[in-house]
Image: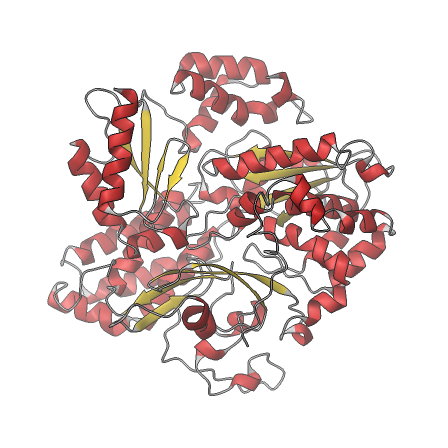
Length: 449
Length: 149
């Protein structure tokens, strides 16, 4: 159900919302002060109770991740904040950095304290110059005001925050690649175990959290974990609170909207996104960034498991299910970053898939053979299909390649690229076959309206 | 530069920030830059070379004075990125990946720049230009040529 809130976005429309003065005038840093006065375990406990699922795409419970951090006898711990926002369709973290950077810094203080770290690195993609500038300025203001430093907020707990940037590589959004990039290396993912909580940045215990996840922490401390979780319709399924939703593509009002979890794709597309342009119909929607398999509006929920979070929605359209980590997973896709891409019926699905495989071929880091070769191979097959020279067997070949990439790579990029390819093939099989049979004449051949 | 080294527990981590700093001054990363960064960060030149070739934002050859990046990934493509790119190519008289003869503008395509709700978009040097139309692109390119002319 659509319940819009202004929690993460409460300062967005205030003039000069990026400054310390405005942030403090709106109760800024109160939550961090409160957290630093609590036992560390209690802070972690609140975040656990909040059912805060990671906002970067994987949806792992943040409080549980924090509890993996054990004090090391000789090594320091680090917080690393993932703001390498690069998943096609996703543009939410940027709004937090640009419009409320102090909320990010406050989140860093709370998260550092929760995991026992004194230093946080915010890894921002290099292209986001305004975001970096706003974060650095916020850090400087916070240091000058004694909010950050050896005695953060006048307590005995030291916290400092630094901004680090990559240099243009989607794979650096993968946490272990990000850590290598932070250390001045090529951004190639690492084999796990060891996991970052044991051996992360600079070989020290590290927690990597998405930027929105961290920026949500002040609210959790302020409201209490359980209260925060109860904002969500999926509270009972361990998916709590509110989050940023995005919508782009063929809608009248693309943008970032904040709402309680429980929001459905239909509400995101039609109520918040203003619906599709006149004269067009919904062809499909990619729910949370390009790695999430596409959903078609004709699909309905079908589960026989009464314990499934989907059970209450049996028989309903997939568009009428709350967007949650587990609900989307059970529908064969993902909530991802909850930034949806909307495709109207003017779009040629073959070209949409071609656009995405080009992206994944470009961004595969090249470390694992199945991914490096598989992406290029799939792109070449789609090049051929687009040129009108494809065969039906090519579709089976793409299916085979994508299936062989999955599970055979060091990181989740392989799955993240193969799953949407398989999704397009399965859900648009008829359109693909028609396209091949007619040499492309069956299709609009278009992406734009 | 000391400020950069002070952020990290070891010198190696300063590699990428130092490369950015050098590229800002030099326009691209040449062998001298690689050697300089390797020395300062106590890394082998092979390591630094590996880093430079991994990331798409390090220029491995001289580029134009201004960098124009047109995003072409799905959301922007749905919003009309192809016609924006074609217009830039026509207007500048070059193809994607090339630099104008006067060395003023390098035109490139970018993969998703996290402005999906504001597409089509392009990045000119450090600035994002969003909700592009052909007229808007003309004004931006005029301004670029005028500023440098």
